[in-house]
Image (cartoon, rainbow, N blue to C red):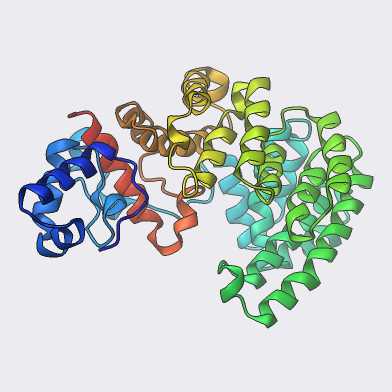
Length: 376
């Protein structure tokens, strides 16, 4: 069993002390000690630790029954929830059935509420990537909603490009997938520029362009010009900042963190970016969850989620997901428990979907760690 990057030094020290007591090398100790004994030692030293993070090959623990903390059982967890916002779920469900009218009503009504519009366009665009029938029927109806259709169409082409590419890393992406991806991305860019013309005050298509920046390898100057246009329209645009952070992640952990710190200083609504950046860099920097700036961002997120605007906003569930990931990772699992209780069965979205088919397993693992932390 190979030793992973250590986060729990005191547990490793206890294991090394036990190995020395037995007169064994570290490698011999790991090879000769059964999993149950290693897990027991982990739990004795720190009941919140997940042995699977410490020693490769151990099962994921801690073994707690989350239902005793009011959390739903693992078999009830879902990763396919459309949206925590009912009106968006209604519009997406109708669109999938071929009815464009709820989407049109939602986008007309929410114009100017850029957070709601961003969330609605994002969700509706996923359906366009699967089936364009409903949006073409909307276009053919001649309702005068061209600016809304254009925003959804541009984001839909972006979704389609990533769908064609697949979720594998570069090494496991076929030449055919890469070619399809690179063919559709310029179409998405063209559609986004058209959308900016149809709705000059709307930040949504500028967010689509920000999202395209990594795939199309925009240089810093082009990215900066688009970024300025977004900020003019909405200085605290959540989706725009989130995907800008992804662009800067291509320049290293430090650049992404720097961007996140600056954004979080502007508003607690953007504090999640710090947690996102820490998660991006945790494999390279094992001390990232100890950083004072990261803990301040977690404090800001908890305060924000405790306000009516933060806890009741369209992005509240997304903030809770990032907050529980950060709190557990930073050794503050007990503070994550109320947020897990609010999330309930919802294991969708980031960061959990990064694990693909193992999303529910990892969501549940973090829940168990949060519950165990209350016993420490």
